Image (cartoon, rainbow, N blue to C red; front, side):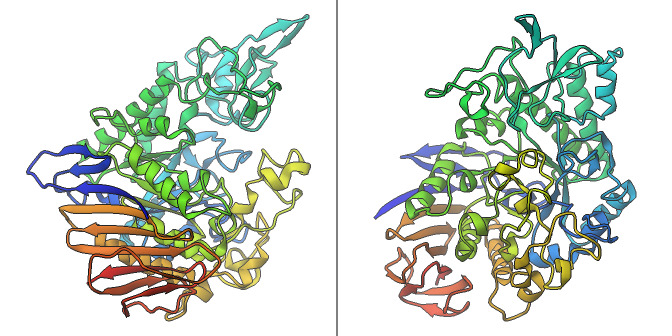
Length: 581
């Protein structure tokens, strides 16, 4: 039996905190946290992708009034805060990630008054609202870009411009950089007679963060929304904020010979450059200054960085914590390292990798899905939905849920002709492989036509699976459903929101198909046992108490919450959370 143990000791002092690492285990001695200051450290964040969430006016597009209508659902689910994917004014080339005005709401979603109402109502429901902040690029329709194209004074270098180079008498891009959308990252602007750089779509030019005016302009955007009343930001695509100032060609990865393919390049000149971290640290200061000046509950900043963990952890700040970055940067290990066919060893290694690498003074977090990745039920198997929700609920730190995961939604059915994802619809031959539309289909509120999402024609087709997987059917007292399991998990997590002096976490491989996660909070012992295999197993789980009470069970379990057990037999893909007595 192989055990990986990650230990957190909290030693309460009046004003100081001390941290140490012993024998490979993680130990944290910390002060007692104010609940208002550190509400986010044990929060359940819920991502709303507004377009498919809830349509209030029958135009087939989700909107802010729709979110207001569904605040009771968020409260019932037990989430702490919700972050909204972009709602700002946009031509919608990339579903709002191409912003033409950072300080206004896109008419598809509503108005500034609608957002004010949402903030007011959410506060009444005890839910905090986080906005998606997209600093890497704007829309090519943004006023800044139009002024930069015209070389208006003060905006000449707001974006990344280059003359290119001449090869055999023809002007070509300055280097071999390839965008995330798998095409040259350079587009020639005829009016300015220069190339502009875009890490994403042609219509999404990158801002030039070597220009201090750009940095200050984006800080002002943050201040505007903090003054407006939001509780913080999810910062998009942070690894790409800076580029090599000499515009050198990116080297080929060993074994590759095609320089025009993105996955053949080692992105050493366009990703995770040192100035990028400094920009994030400056953004954090804006958030902290607002919190301290206004003496309000912590305004939080979380960052999106799909990158190697040794680089990812730098977005938190310096290793000693003296320089602060994000309150937390999304942990995508369950997305990037697990797929169908995963093993117990994979789960153990993924949790160990994160906890062993993140400096002990920083708060961990666990993300299962997002609008950019196939849904958990599709990616890891619908039979494992409860087990993975339990896993993220019992592990220390922040839990992040993408809308629909609480009911076990799977990918929807979308054809290339119906799709909207700009990186996929340009080539229908690869649409099924590349599109993100499948995880963006409308939320399943009920089993009626259009799943209760809209009275009109939905912007993406509603999945046929809505008839069998929907909130109305699952949100019934006494029914064994993914949603009821999720609500029980939110209640269970309250055990970790109280003050404590000892918090110990260990992940154990019981058998080739059964994983155990143990968490000790002071004298309380909590255990998750999860059978990922296709056969029933009787397991001798690791224990320190004489008897155990069942707290939460998966939908296929015969065990009942509140029951006592001495031995444990798990059906295929069954999972249970126990408390030692």
